[in-house]
Length: 358
Image (cartoon, rainbow, N blue to C red; front, side, top):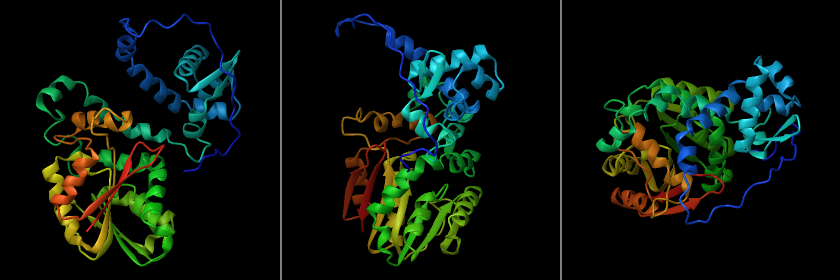
């Protein structure tokens, strides 16, 4: 992922305000409770700013309330309140009447940046995803989603087409990290199976690095249309084949040097994962590898925060999914016949890469 934006970032010094001394660490404070009760407003504010192109306007040097409101076709009062709120959250800076972009917003929320990822809100905050938490207490009682029997895992769920289209910017960095870890630049003959390919970027990126790599992508038919479109755009269409259907039922074929399991195993319980991994093991050549991309918490299950909290997404949206520790993944792969696994944390990515060997 690029570490520079396509335009000069507009920044202003943060206005400093005097504050009172922090309360003693042992003193009970309801502030965090109040903030959490109202945390939905943060999501709504960020979505609104993306929809109104506030960050892009500021990146284009339209930095006053009047300028932003005119571009967004919104009221000045509404824009002022929204921009002040985003300043409090740390996405914007403010100097007198001018707003600027904080570094994260400049990199990831300005459409002029090659690293723009504002489109992710269309999947992460889709109405179906939000509704999954309307009755979270019931999901806790049940131990899984109350969004119907399958949650988000139903065949041909339109959400996965949205995932493929809107989450691609978030996947560029891990796709490049995986290509480096598997030595794609060596240009050796390689047959790759990309399971639950989605946007297809993981396999496509390996094909871009390695002109001898042949990619086979597996996913639901409507999702594969997005992957094939991306393969055409990347110039690897002639080396990109597809298998429509379920990873648990479709004929996988064999002779693969590499199998990609990116953001997939967390949807299922360990026995189901092991059932899939046995199929994957059989499809690999001797010495073949599986590359898994996952949110992997430490054994304490509360650190690091991004990986540890991912289990809540699984509780709300899947029947039995979870965020598994490396020890749990290692056990699943060993039970499925793999000889060893290696764990790579890829800072600043919230996800880890696990490479397992047949």
